Length: 116
Image (tube, rainbow, N blue to C red):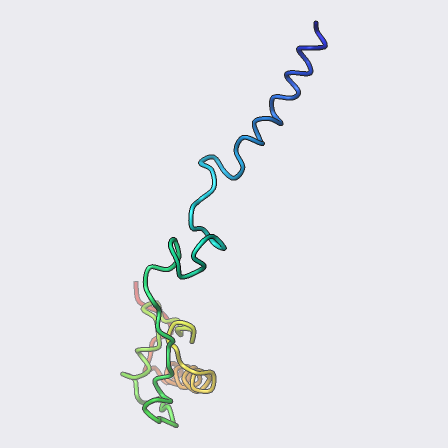
């Protein structure tokens, strides 16, 4: 009789884990790889347009460090240079842009960091 109690107690935790397949609430409908794909139900709510380089569309070759108003659009509120995945600027223009921002910072046209 003591043997029966130990076997049922040992089997109980393994049975509990098989009852809940994924997480405490069960499987999520429309998750990643689910029905409908990435754009279907449960996916993105809106269509995100591909970002196009502002400098390429306006055919701006030289990015001047003196053009503070232009450079401020690519510097975050805290003073960090915004990455190209957020701005949509191409690689060559992002390099020129970051060099111009750094140059403008060195001659005090742009702040290095935000004031608190």
